Image (cartoon, rainbow, N blue to C red; front, side):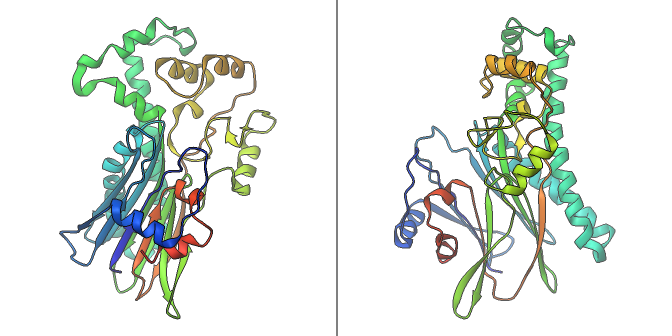
Length: 340
């Protein structure tokens, strides 16, 4: 495998536009940057960012060369870039540690152990985001969440003089969110790849078949367009009328699995406090209303799906992009775009 290619595209406003392959090629060429891995001259990484109206890009990519192959990660942030930035710099390293341990422990049983290690690593990473936030809040005040008031907010946010111990980024890493696609590629006599994902970013494997590129979808989409995800939510939270509102989980997120998003993962008393502390998407009237209703978090799962693929000779491209490109490209584009 000689190329790993990554592109992302923001959906501009509420308008859906379909582009020709030539249009997208020009956009990609004008916005892409290429870097050659110092570990492997045959590994090329292409990046393209289409930012549209956002003040700053919330999406991140991470590529790590390891002694056994590569790890590639794409993180599509929402609400801000605190989670995607932090995850891109840290979770890939944690995955590498766990995969290295799995290989050292039992190279003959990787098909069974690597999915378990990937799931555990991503779940633990997400849990740490929330636990760290709660510990920081408890350092300031140990009273029940239901007793926190607006007077506590300035005290909590007024701790920025603490430098690296400032709770602001810690809080945002728990309250904002990000989707995840992580591909672990192990090079041996046969190339094997495991793809883990949360949310609706996507990965594709390009393969030449009869002189034409074909695309294999690498991961499940965890959003409300996926009937299986809707069914899972309804089974986990029976009898909740506001479970899906405006085609969004609890009226807030289009995805059903992600890192962060603490407000949709914690009890209502704590969710109300977090909404008050900083501009998370749950207004006070919503928390007051939900306090009177059935509320059974978590609504956003941190359990990734994992799939395995064999990479054969001649496969030259792994194409990973964030979800918004799906809305503005035609149905043929995933295959066409692999020709970039």
